[in-house]
Image (tube, rainbow, N blue to C red; front, side):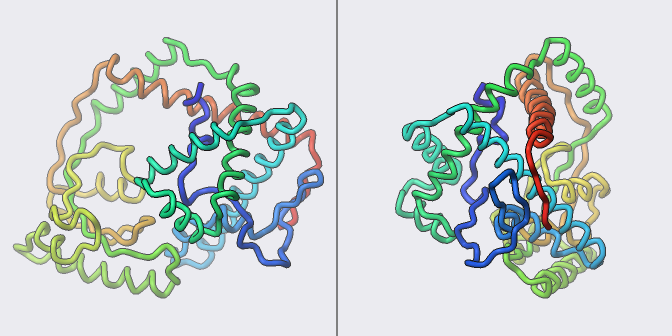
Length: 323
């Protein structure tokens, strides 16, 4: 059952909401019953994705994207507030041991072994270890609530799995995988639009250089890439659809062998991609795919019933959106 709500229980080091760095005077984004959600908390929750849309040149599209991200972040926070009220009413609690176990999971996921280093990373993000643990406690009890209210509704049958496998084989047999290399021009997460544009201009120059006749892309990657794969000539190996971020994947599977892409933006910066080879995908057996398909279906059904549950809570609550 732990995997059933893993997408909510999974806690990454730099993810999550806290108003630790909110200004003393803060605008109100929403009121949920008697609980206030400050605008700063919504901004902090949306911050990673907001950085991504800064590269959008069209101001109208950028504004629309930012508005949608803020709405999504606010809806998430409203759902959390509603679930916290349910937790309180039902008397759901957690133990310090459960929270400590989750902290250890976070340390492991982020390859941090020294607690002092972890505390420094938390400090950089506006947390203390105590405030971070408090955030984790809320997540643990929400997790228990969802296992109680949503868990019993989520079932994956053998028929579901076989139908998913049939769809998988149909798609895979028609698909290919690509072997690609890339060159990364890094962009800081807090970069200004001007810095993002300057990095893009640099990436465009590298892309032009990569298209010169006789240019060895691997050698160029070793010399110019700012990513960890630079030493390997930017080699990404073979990958299928659904592995890379959408923008990267779209470029990779639209390129012909030997073609070099225009700069592609991800959270890491601007990438110049070259497809070395394309080949047909071999289809995995049902037994091999069964655990992956089961996990995928569980997550999809959990998300569906979670949305329904939050909407039920919201329909019975007094929610006033002010932003």
